[in-house]
Length: 66
Image 1 (cartoon, one colour):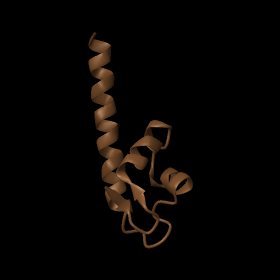
Image 2 (spheres, one colour):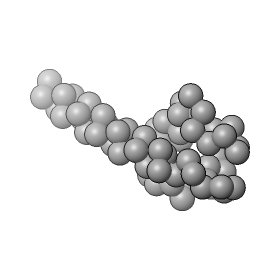
Image 3 (cartoon, one colour):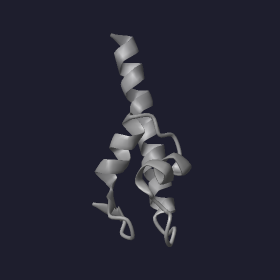
Image 4 (cartoon, one colour):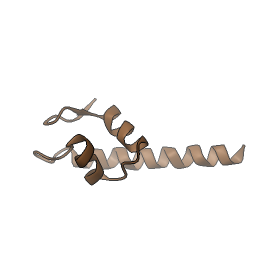
């Protein structure tokens, strides 16, 4: 799904950037130009970042339990 219409950035691209080390909207702006035009996408991007962190923490907990 497109998150940033201005720069054609999808949620998949955001998740890939997060997996590669991006940690905030500023990092996403540098790598994907997310939020560099109108900025309306930054709220949704922050939600994706938060969900990604939560999922990563759950994965780490599940892995450490093994």
